[in-house]
Length: 386
Image 1: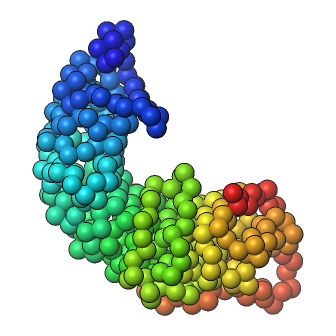
Image 2 (image 1 turned 90 degrees about the vertical axis):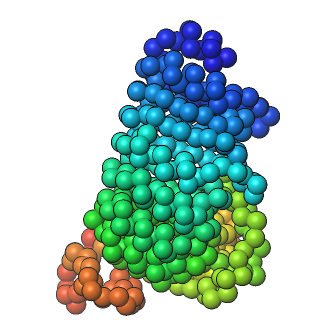
Image 3 (image 1 turned 135 degrees about the vertical axis):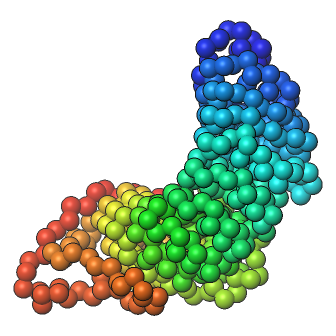
């Protein structure tokens, strides 16, 4: 098939192969390498179901984007692609995967010097892999996603922060970082980071999440799914948009029951708290927020929910209590008109570390209420419960 495509499309620039549940991709590493080498105009290659690859040496002077999924036990993985700017490598979640990730990432600096976006999903990710990656001298890296590495720690965050100071996206979902690691992230990336994903990080608390939103003014997306968990709750069923399948809830989450989250942010657009069963109070003042995921937040109390987010378009509330769903609908579906104070919002002093009940919970205007409030025109908001 690859030979046929190569012959029929001599100037091919983009190719994507997707697989259904019953399909089998039998392309091996040698065939893949030959195809990439022959297609001298190829810029983007995306392949699913790469379990038969076995290993490869990719050489291309034109390839800029490479996505490979379902990789397993690669004997070798060498890149000689000087124009490559984006790599996404997803490995199967088998404990006996023998891929040498340290050697692989060590070669990125020599073979992919222009790399800007790197995504690796593997349960074999560790602090040693992070150290090898930071030694690769990828100074142009802007987006880094290291997912499912339970051995990635706060020390790994320190290494990342010292080596990649200009990150705009950081995804450490499934890692063992704590609030201390979040503090390091906030200290290094306040002027660049716009997307932070920390789903399935059992050592992160509501205090760390609040601190991140307070100290990262450019933040537009934050995913904290399955962080604040009640260990006595059943594992929630995740929708198709979730990237993880959780098999058990860590017993280290005992201290995360009955947590409250207070977030005030002027740029945040997407916030995901799916599966945060240990969350019982949520107060949001985010004028640009358009997507909120509260799926399986089953212990969130209706009387402890306040959504001051006039641009909300979708609220995901599958697995929530009926009373909570009703409260969400009443707050986002124009049953209570939203008001905006004429005075601008102000940040707390940069040196403040304490999280206080914010001013937006108070109804009194700064000028004593003499000036009229102006109405905000709300957009229709969908509350999704299926």
